Length: 175
Image 1 (spheres, helix red, strand yellow):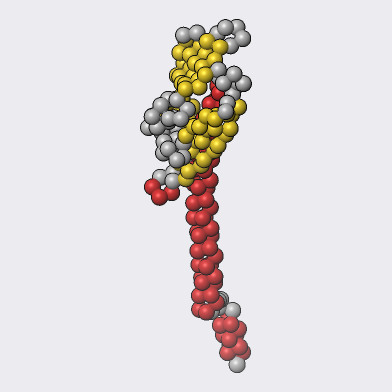
Image 2 (cartoon, one colour):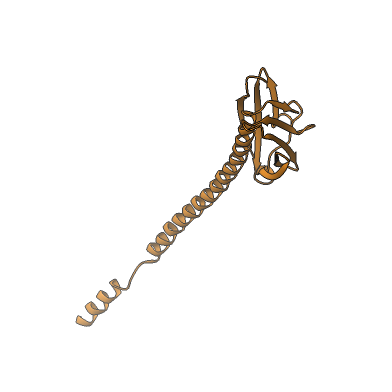
């Protein structure tokens, strides 16, 4: 009889039942699936945020340099056709009679600033991935105010993000 009790107590301490093991595996699987879905969403949102930031920074950088030059301008040419048919050309004479010219040209989505000070020319890439569509990137000059609309694009395929920035720039009163 004593031998029978000893065997029974060992059998009860044998470990987990099959149902307990299956329940633990199922719970672990549900948690792992939730973690993998959350990780995929975080990576997707990070890509979207990076694309938005790149497009926004390109548009803001372009607006900064154009407004920097346009506030000094005594003459602005090509505003109505920029960037589709004309380059934007800004000209002014400094307080020390130094002649300044800034030409903005958009080729293949790259906006370049060709700056000349008394004949010394410097070419600088201002922004890349600028959308050249006339409805998204354009200039309008009216009553001494230059309104510049720049759209930066980033991303690939069907995930392209366009960010449009608009700035009204008051030029010198003589314009």
